[in-house]
Image (cartoon, rainbow, N blue to C red; front, side, top):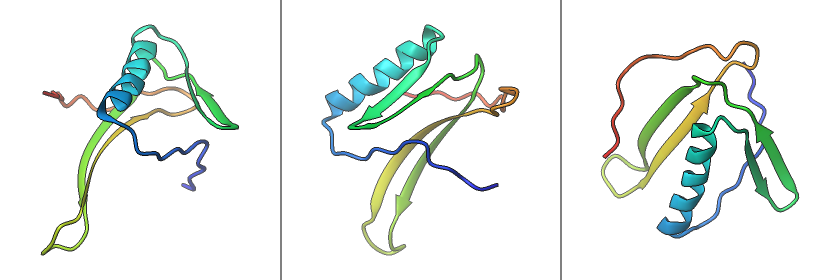
Length: 94
């Protein structure tokens, strides 16, 4: 299935700034509100369903025998037509 990027932003931020942005997303999710992403003139508003699929991924990119780039990705995913529930594996974050 082809992918269409609706919004993208990539900037260096302090840990505190990132935590604040993630907290805002978490608060909107907890309150059942839409999430609006804005950077400059670009903006998109999304309405996650009550039970979207939540994917967490830790990756290392780079050579197998040397230092690379580490990342943590958090993704909410849902079907536009029915908001179907995803898997049921128990996730814990410490």
